[in-house]
Amino acid sequence: MKILKVILIVVGIVLIAVGLYNAFVPQELVDVGPLEVSAKKGLNNQTLGMIGLGVLALIAGTFIKQRG
Image 1 (tube, helix red, strand yellow):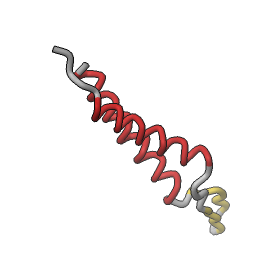
Image 2 (spheres, one colour; image 1 turned 30 degrees about the vertical axis):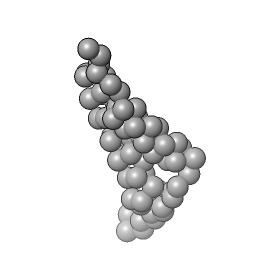
Image 3 (cartoon, one colour; image 1 turned 90 degrees about the vertical axis):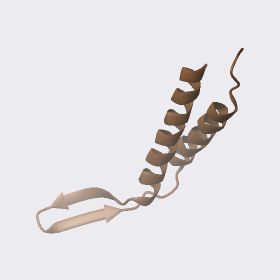
């Protein structure tokens, strides 16, 4: 159970970090010579879902009890 707890916590942290990165770091869309266009995707359904799953994984990892 301890391995599952650690895996859930690590996966939760990674999902939250990737979701926040995708939400707030501008993504380069077009780069043609001196012209560079970038845009912010913002909080879309995929980003919110990724952050939500990360939070659920963290909560599950925190509250798993040891057998014994």
